[in-house]
Image 1 (cartoon, rainbow, N blue to C red):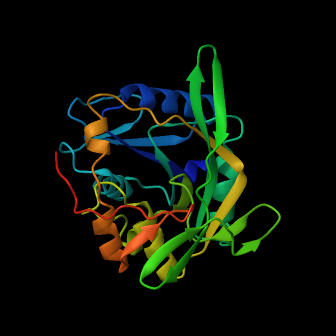
Image 2: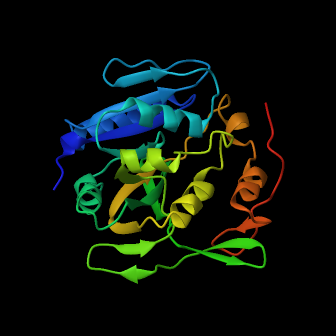
Length: 254
């Protein structure tokens, strides 16, 4: 099995220094030796000396930032993280790494608990995003289901942006489509699916998700690239797990 020294946590960040601090602090608490690489394309850089820090051109986008990180790291595996996540004792990265390193699957992803603080309490709610793709009548529908079940994982087509994969495998896939500054998630996993890669969902591996927004972050986060993503997939639209269509618009700029 692979050692944790063979994996790097990669984090693309934009205008959320408080969220990034919370995530890195939590990683250091539970995995103090885990290598961390951060790519920052914000207008106000959040330089850090305690990680491998890449300063990118302003607003290059999520996909370009992740690709820059993939090209930069030297470990055979990587752990993909959004900057608004947080580790807990349930964030068992070793379980994800073992599945990929054993060759059982190509991508092993965990689950989210969406967190919201109210007064002195933190509310946690399960936030599922694992399922299968169903192509029908020119549309793509996300279905909350799995392809097969095993003792520690389930096979599916898509998981959260919280997974371990082999670095060279994702580079060979082409990484993320850099025209999609946002809304890249489903398009990436459709290419994974069409390449025949195996995706695992591990329900017992959980990250906390805070969804932090700020005044200088929200206008950029709210840009809509779903129409472009649907076009690249080759469908008219993508329907969410609840069956509702994701609005298809031309990409916007700020």
